[in-house]
Image 1 (cartoon, rainbow, N blue to C red):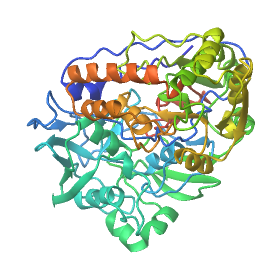
Image 2: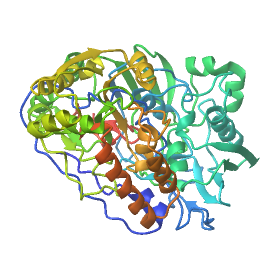
Image 3: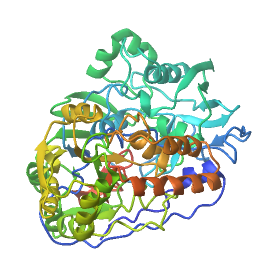
Amino acid sequence: MADNENPNVTGNMDRLYRTDLSRRALLRLAAGSAAGLSLSALLAACGGGDSTPTPSGGSGQQGAADSTPTQASDGTPAADETPEPAGEGGGVITVAITAPLQSLDPANHRDRVTETVLRAMFDGLVTRRQDGEIVPEIAESWEQIDDTTWEFKIRSGVTFHNGDPLTAEDVRFSLERVAMDGMMDGETSPRKSLLPPIAEITAPDDQTVRIVLESAVPEAILLAGLVHNQIVPKAYVEEVGGEGLAAKPIGAGPFKFVEGDVSDRIVLERYDDYYGGSPDMPPVGPAKADGVVFRVIPELSSRLASLKAGDVHIVQNLNVDSARSLRTDPNIVVKSYEGTRTTWLAMNVTRPPFDNKLVRQAMNYGLDVQSIIDEVLGGEAVRMTGAVPPFSQFYDDSLQPYPYDPDKAKQLLEEAGVGTNFQFVLDAQEPDRAVAEIIVQQYRQLGLDASVRIWEWPVLQEATLKGERQMLLGSWGNSFRHPVDLINPTLMTGGRGNYSQYSNPELDELLERGAVASKEEAAEIYKRVQQILYEDAPWVFLWVPNEVEAGSAALQNWEPGPDGRELLADTWLAS
């Protein structure tokens, strides 16, 4: 089914625990039948994916300093060397994106589509490969100085698109702009929560940045936050302000801004003086393509028509029918690969009837999740058995999915004293309408008075976080495949994505311990975490959808990432 098998993705977890890991193989489901429903419909921005800091850590007890710097592999071209394309390269790649961008200021958004565009123009201290491993980018190496202090060495020879050299002071400024309150033209960056709490950032010299955290966290957590934050030129931003940066962005990435509008299209051209990017992501050197154009095309039918006509070269978020149809077109390549965005129904545990865990368990028994995966999603998803997805190294495979058992569901509802005579509303976004309707139809078969209500995400998010809604069809990215990247923000008391209003002191204490525990300790901690959440059932556990994309057969070296972002520095169009 999948055109590109996703290899081992535990590189940073290996670094975290300094031991070999064997990634749990994900269940591969065969492409099946059924309706044209969005396979990534639930990419609905529930705060995550672009979501929380994607973690990493140290050896044994987290406080221990690691005296061995983490370094990039050898192979960075000398300053006077320009890698030859060896007959490869060229063309302008056009990517159809699904929604307008939030901003071209990398500190002023919380959106995967926006980050896909920005990552073509801006680089960060570290980046993530397609296989999920975090590797050096602008940083050449880093080491832990003490429990809370990390020192990064900055690669020499890096320049911004205006020709200014990138120094440690630019890194300090860029990270402070995100990490500290009021540093974004008097406002606080919406990306602040992607970083662990930072006490201080300094630049002792042009090639050194020191980050002092408020408390010790695993290396993985810090690096994951840094993946989602890119470097901007301090002098330029101080001159033009955040609005000026958003109007004419200047970064240090493989492509530079030419023109565009966030609601229409963004045109980029190759930056010929690009330092080459991460040496751990060969080939190293300037981008292969002449340029990239990102076009906003919200309607899937229009994106597909543009792809078939050759007007665009990459289309994301395919549905079952369109993917099956495109696979027969010799001019188009379809790629399906394991996603990282968990999907669930978040029940408000503070309001009747979902304040009763028997009711919440009944909702899990009363939904035939596997049939939806097989018959509606065409098999393009992996079932979640609990709150931690199967691709996590801490997944508890002793837990079995709630079986579809309508009689058991009705029995639990009677035990809870509510029976089947109650109303509830499932809130969702427009792209999720079809799946939401199927879900409520199944609940109606139990005798429940269920309905769907569609909202724009900003309104729905605010209302849900305030506890004003009953049930949300939601999702959260878990691109680093660690519970701290998923459970902490969504189910910890006061979490920024706690749409269930769930609060459990025992769980909170376990999650705090798990964030800094050794691998062995963390395994036991997260096993208990999963047992608690399986029993309390603040969510109806659904699935992790595969990412399904289509591209022109003329694309060379195109390998989309499992988190839905396009990394195009080494992709080009065959002539």
